[in-house]
Image (cartoon, rainbow, N blue to C red; front, side, top):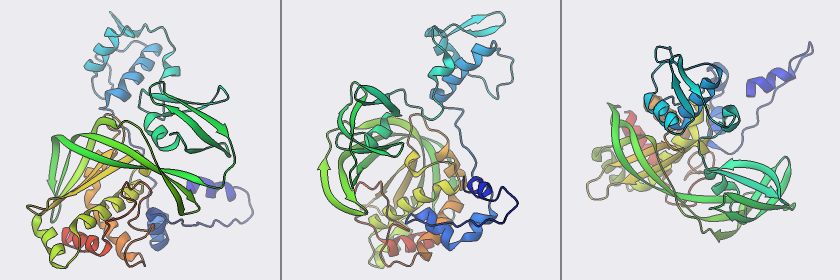
Length: 372
């Protein structure tokens, strides 16, 4: 998008000037300190997980409206489970020529290109539909008390009905904004791949995630002026995840130096998430993270997971690129001018611990040992 906007300025025959302004987020600051990485590298690659039935089932229904789907057709892979489920729901029907669409709705009108969740929240203003969003976005942006920006106007969310999937808003210009906080817990269901990575090991597999949104901040500029509780049930889903196991020999050196191993892992988790858009066409809100330190036996783990049911392919891309990603994370933290951490390196707007318990110097020690 940066190149596209720059091209518009220089579209005519006259000279044009493009200025990049770096905000206080780690990816912007990484490019400010490593401009050649921005100007010389290829653009990001769009990632889509064709193994996720929540994605493929809907698009198979759309394909069947145009022509029958045959088993001998070159689809890249077969989709027997999805086709069987669509048949059971009366959406597809088998014929001698292949599967045809028999649903009572317009398939292309139902399938969303910008979301996976089947739970769509309607945002209503005076009974009129203002916009729709998936449930995870609504937890962040349309909870009761939230400020919602829509087409340049600010709205206050007066009521969020979780069961009815409706958020009622009223228009009001205010001089503050809100920011929901979340905490995650994670359990590993299975390992699909694993590999050695210098002084550590990387895994890719299936996990179950529970995200809790306990409170939200009211902020004016970057200053927190109030913190209010939220009463929302957890968001629970199964997804894909990549994680790094840091051996006890590495974390013990951090402890010997008097640094906090838990805060070091936490800082690295934040920084990895902030740099993931460097490789994948995604937003940091599309992924989640969870880090843990084994106080009894030493060692630690950093998990990075897809923030959508079934996964969308980002975690798998991270698995393949983890070596490079850890190197870039080290450079980001090392080159930041702050002493103990800041929004340009290890702070995260998503942090459920309000960016407490972070150890920048410990994170550098850990990363130096991992990439040694």
